Amino acid sequence: MPKVYLTRRETFSTAHRLHSSYLSDEDNMRIFDKCNNPNGHGHNYVLEVTVVGHVNAHTGMVMNIADLKYLIQEHVLKFIDHKHLDKDVDYFRETKTVSTTENLAVFIWQQINTVIDNQFDNIKLHEIKVYETEKNIVVYRGD
Image 1 (cartoon, rainbow, N blue to C red):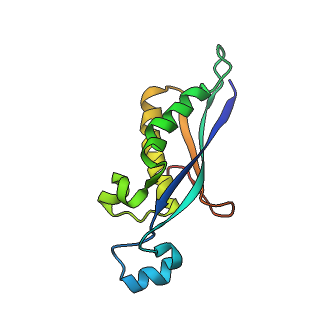
Image 2 (cartoon, rainbow, N blue to C red):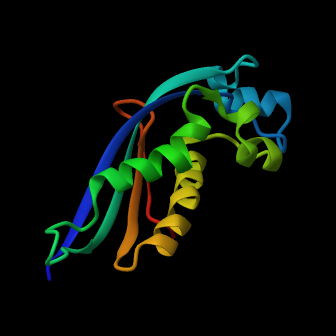
């Protein structure tokens, strides 16, 4: 059976503040500039989740796209859409992880990867791609 990559695209809006508790206020401002605004700022993100697997001979699909849509909604979007990452999302708030797009991509991977591994036999999460802007894009493949 052919190996095929299947991607679902979603959009979400969220706010955050780029600020590291390991740096001084001066260093935070120098490194993160306007993104260090104490009140935060927001983005309208685009998320692409790609899985890989072999086409099922009976269904003709790698995975039912409705199942992938549901996984993204239940394990990612309901936690981050229209939220403040640093205040509303335990992963960032409790660990004091800087809410960069890089760390957001890792968080999304962690939210989805185990679910896919536990619920689907012949499918693997291949890639998380987060578009912070048209020009700023982060790709994470789990390594």
